[in-house]
Amino acid sequence: MNQEDAVTTLRSENEALRTENEQLRGELTLLKERLHVLEGWVAKESRQMDPDKHCPSCHQSLRGGERFCPWCSFNLTFACPFCGSQNLLFDRFCLHCGQPLSSL
Ligand SMILES: [Zn+2]
Ligand SMILES: [Zn+2]
Image (cartoon, rainbow, N blue to C red; front, top):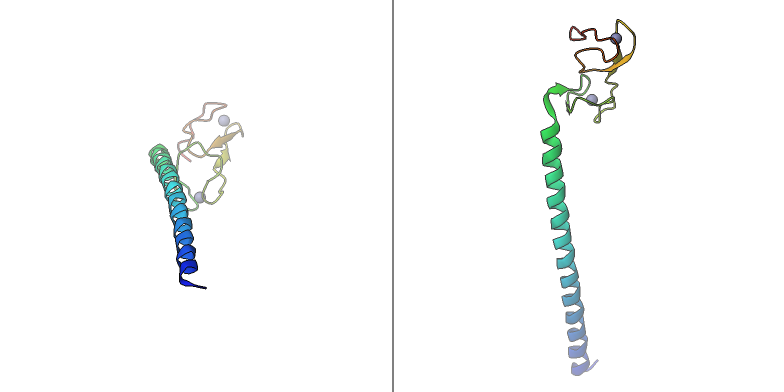
């Protein structure tokens, strides 16, 4: 390889790297935007979490409307002692017969 060839090779490599660099920069911008969206989503989701409601099995925070713990899949429903219908763990009253469930 003579010197001129070497310079040409280096130039084209340099050009390729520049193109790659620009592509990566574009991807980085996209990823940053996506991250921003995700961060907003996480902030929104964590606001919806009720700090008083925790899974009795793994003690992670819950929103309170889940049938199963999203963290450990613990069953968060139970049968009403009065009518036997399924209620969510954090319901204060049976949705079917209206009996208070707060003692549970
Ligand atoms: Zn759990
Ligand atoms: Zn009931």
